[in-house]
Length: 104
Image 1: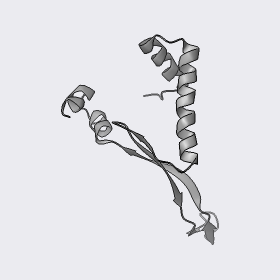
Image 2: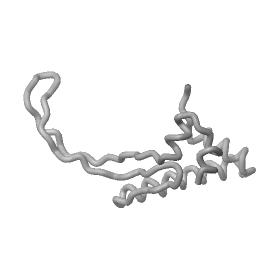
Image 3: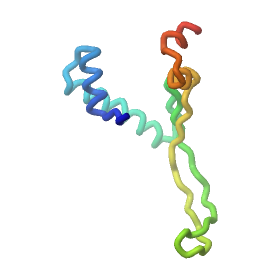
Image 4: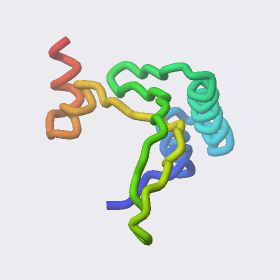
């Protein structure tokens, strides 16, 4: 099982919607740009039937160096967490999108 690249997304959008690959690539780039910008501003990104991307701050903490065994300070870190929707979980676990969406 491989990974879906931005280029492949653009190609699929192009085939599905009839856009040029260049226009589809711009669409994909802008989509991700908007998500990144929102996360940089501390906003959650909610995508219905897909999930939520949420920026979080992991607090500074003490740890142990795996090399020396000495205690070290691990600095605070900004990261993103993804919480999949019930719809996405259902699809991944074998239910068809049609089945899940028709139950609404």
